[in-house]
Image (tube, rainbow, N blue to C red; front, side):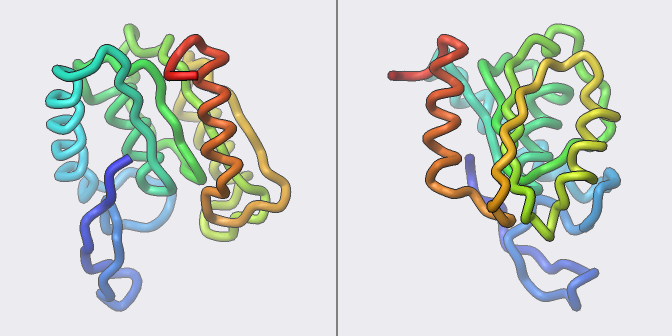
Length: 162
């Protein structure tokens, strides 16, 4: 789960924020392409070092993890984690539809409301078997319990270290 670069966000008075792409909202924007390239290069180099490559991200990072892991990379990942994210429309590679995906989201997330995120998963992850964990009191963040949940979820899939 690498960190996004600082970039000016036009819709936020060109202030600097950590972001994977400049567009806010739930529609694809080509400003994500440099980040896709960055993550795919990272995936390729890490794949040479491990047989269990997992990718994940928070918010826009979750979008990026899903995009790279399901539709953009020839590197086969073992699992994808998307925290407080959503899914862009994408052409999911048939060989990637069996990758386990964890969607972890808070119902008190005001930045990425659950109903919009869930709708994006239903519309854009056809054929992908994803698991959803909803936290009723969680805002737009990853609580410590979210990491513990992911570790246990990976273990339930026979992945990761115990």
